[in-house]
Amino acid sequence: MERVKVYFDAVAMYPEDDVEAAVDALLAGSAPGVNPNFAPPAPVVASECRRQMNLRLRRLELERMARPQLPPPDIEKTPEARERAKAKVAEFLASLSAPDSDVEATKRRNEQFAKTNARFYPDMSDEAVKARLMRGSGTVWTAGDEDSGGCGVRTRKARCFHGIKPFAECGWTHAAFATLSRCWT
Image 1 (cartoon, rainbow, N blue to C red):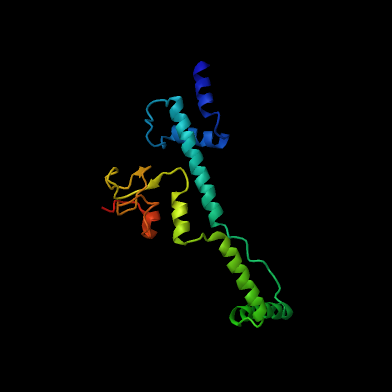
Image 2: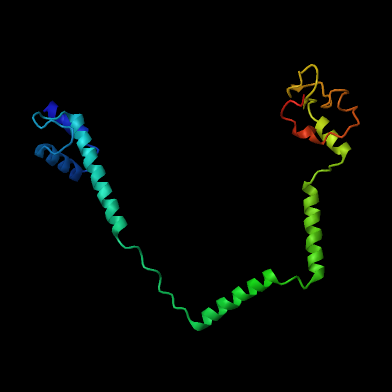
């Protein structure tokens, strides 16, 4: 009885139809990789149950895919509905292609865009860029600094990238300073 319990435990998670198909395949000798001269151990029976289950699921999937899909809905297109749709499309196309007839509205919209964009664009004057670069913990990218070897490592000695003066004292415009990522020497 203990021997039979092992087989029941091995196939407990599979549906009865798959277990029956697996037993039929094992008895007929059609299960791949199983020697039909000997009784298969419980794990082999469970493996054949899994194979039969996968075959069944694949067969069901193929049947589902072969079934025709839902037909398109039968929507009556009346002449009035077609005219309304044509009018909406024409109105939309006219709004895209026609220049704005309301000059005042266009001016207000452009002013609003400019005002909104101004909130997100930083001041790009030399002084403002320098202040932004020097702000923070004092750690900045340097290149050309004798102490760092000119290899772009972070250091607390902020020198301009031609390495002559500290960055804060240098009067030369350093537009490329913010994008330094490699050695400039």
